[in-house]
Amino acid sequence: MTLNDLFSQLPLQYEYYPIHYLVMVDFENNLNWMQKEEKEKLFNIFDKPANSMKERIKFLLNDAFALKILDGINTIGTIYFWDINLEKMEIGNMRLVLAPEYQHKGIGYGVIDYLLYWLQHNDFKIISASIEQKDITAIKCFEKAGFRKTEKDKYSIKF
Image (cartoon, rainbow, N blue to C red):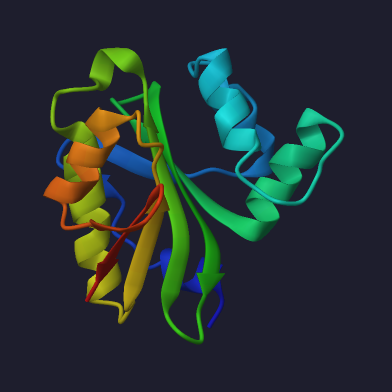
């Protein structure tokens, strides 16, 4: 089973927030809402170097799985999974980014909780997330969803 096979089974609707796959053709357009600092963080999360934005996006889509969260038609957030091991059924890292005006409304927690439920019922064993210690809001959101600190800047949940 491939990652795309697995995620093609995901019911893509959390409450009234549809969730769609991000593909190369619409990836750049769907990052327009994201602040420059957040874009830089996103593209610097991988160890492999990339020279251009297109190379970074291609790398992100080849070695990760990305979903966009909508408020109907507009992208309000994205969630990324990488360092995925389907043999062990582990996701080594995930990251959720929401537009500032949608933060502190329970959407991030709801999406994480929704995806964790689905991942658990599809036999995933461990999901991890890297969260900067200064990002108190993200830490609280992930802890509320069941993640626990396992090392500096790393939080995990085991099923």
